[in-house]
Image (cartoon, rainbow, N blue to C red; front, side):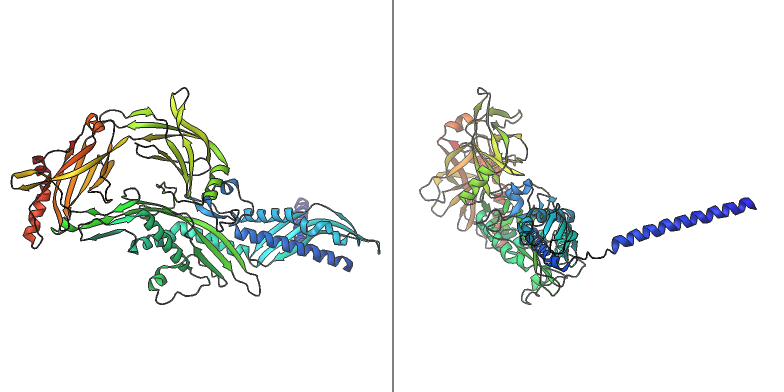
Length: 637
């Protein structure tokens, strides 16, 4: 029994000890939570107010900068030195940058902790210009001060800022001393609220590709932008790429501002904009933002990378088609273009002023991407077309941006069927580097290493997925996507070509009889199409569209290539003849030739007044390759 009593005493003692420890911990926590305000003599109150005002003013400056700069105060090098990674909204002040939170397939959202650190650093580096060593109070008090440290907290109602600034203040008239460890202030700008909505917008855009989908809708629905359609016509439809680009820029400029974010503050769209009311309201968040509205902006002066396929350089053409309908064999042109598009747009989140907080605006950018008519926000490569930028702006980018060495080797590449390609060193290639709207001429390749190779090695502007181009007369343009974020080597292979003048003559054919050649009538024309293995295509028109200028056609050079040759003979009524065959000119003959004469067959006129006539024309088109054996092959003279 005695031992049992001793055990009981020990248990009670242990429990008591645990209770005492728990009470001590609770007391300490309560002491941390409920700190009494520091009471200072009334003479020091103006100094406290002075410091608080400086904290509030400096913090507000920093918060407004963060809002203007998409979460940054100081830009990292990857933004500062890469003009494709931000939007410049003011051409007169290039230092104003709005960073793209999604760029080249990567989301780069500054975190909340990063933003807080930016603000704290800004306050610490700039508050001295306001406090000025407490100069207004130096004659009133004896002041000893310590180091300053800012601590910012983002809250739903605004931003709270504590400035740890130890002061020992002595009042000589009273021989009284007061110690102050920190000063507190608040800024009624709802950075946390606006930042969270901005994050939600980008995260939802990454999921549903809302902007890309609306962009595709704009392309598909505008009659001035060729997409998928057809016309019953014997003349091909032609569009200029620069006109298509200009129209798309206009559409984006006019339509992106119509997009509204559900659960935010916005004016309902007019009833006459039924399509926009149904498609331009974006469900982004489940949280209500009754005092906040969002706007989307694109400016026609901003970059837009556009590639449309198929294309003939800067020209888009329809194609004559042979459909199942007999009538469509003659006078129908069909087009189906696929678009690659990449452009930046601006998102502005505005928190309106209320009784509880001040107005605050937060800007950030997003890069939209479309790949083969589908939303695509990955880092896909597209062929870019140069957009002229102001010369001074271009020169500054090309000459002053952080750069790395890029060594570019240039070769003549001769494709030899059944044999490895023949690669010869090729000097004199004009090399340029295009990054979004900036095209930088970099110089010419030349023989180096005693003539062992042809190359250009120099510092290139910083860019991710820029377009490296090589151009030389007598060669097809070569291009490669190259990033210059590190030193590296690149290779350009240029294919040799030759341009030859040509004419078209016709042979009237009835049954098995084929007449002698004769020239085309004034209302007649011929379309030439030359292809090789679906990898090379060349087109020509006779007579030339430009009066007094002879027709020319481009062909591959320095080897004997086998081509598929198609000629379509037309007049105002439609197809009146043609030619179709394989053609393999020898390079020896082609090199010295001054002109090529193409031969085509002309049939007796066949109208389209009834299905029987159309059937006859369809049969002639189907048998064109066989009938073409009766007339001469192209002649080189």
